[in-house]
Amino acid sequence: MRLSTMCNGRRPDARDQGERRYDEEAGRFLLTGSANLATIPTIADSLAGRMAVIPLLPFAQAEIRSSPGRMLDRLFAGEEPAVEGEVVLGKDMMNVVLAGGYPEALRRASVARRVSWLEDYVTLILDRDVRDIANIDQLDRLPRLLNILAEHAGQLINNSGFGSALGLSGVTAQKYIAILERLFLVKTLVPWSNNRLSRLVKTPKLHFIDTGLLAALREDELVRLSEDKTRFGALLESFVVSELMKLASWSERRMAFSHYRTKDRDEVDVVIEDRRGRIIGIEVKASATVKADDFRGLRQLQDAVGERFVRGLVLHDHDRITSFGERLQAAPLSTLWSM
Image (cartoon, rainbow, N blue to C red):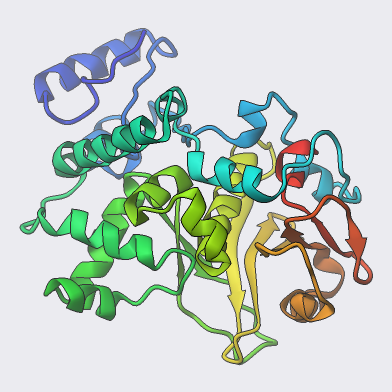
């Protein structure tokens, strides 16, 4: 049985009735919503011990293409990266990134209709669902903040700068970003830390869950991105982070996501760590060419963790896998869904 309105906090009487039914008919109810129910106080309190939370992110490319989507599991199991199936390159990859993964958006017959759906979706979320998870006085600032964040996707979070642009304090901007994260619109990657390294940046990094939505907010389209690879690079990085999160979401292996960056600006875009402390590092490049210098951050990470380092990959716009040292390879972006 599906009960979406009962759990959204707008009908306390229905929620109370629901609690009794949950106890009497456990396992029969599917509660849906666009926010993380565990972060809504009235819901989290009343359903504590009664519910299991399953995040449903937009479709992964592995789901869209009916491929296994086991890259992370296979890498943690010690397998080498492999090119399996069709490799997506160039403008075809740009179109994949621009489309995103929202099912309803993907069903739209044209780019214009897809963008229109995405704009309507985010407007509805910000107008309606924010009230379920937080009481904020300046609700009208959220759409403007989201647009500012879109222009800073893939960058370190600057709460003071974001707040200043909207006449808000840095603390308030941080609170609003947390709300957007609870609505599954953005994702903050915490900085990776290690006692052996003293020059690590300790600032979180910002990404968007869906690059179709991100592109719509930034008014990005194929021609513009073809002429500006730097701009596409920021979009691509969020795409890879989102795809990796989706792969992790259906794995039985628990994984934590972070990013690595030093004060000298050496970095690894995504650091994935399992419960045994083993690490996979992923760097993202929008170009077809990869140089040894592109592995500098990955090598630093490898040196810092030693045998816990399972694999370091630079995912880029190419169709072959190239070795750059022990457990270090450049691999096609489509490895994300072909393995």
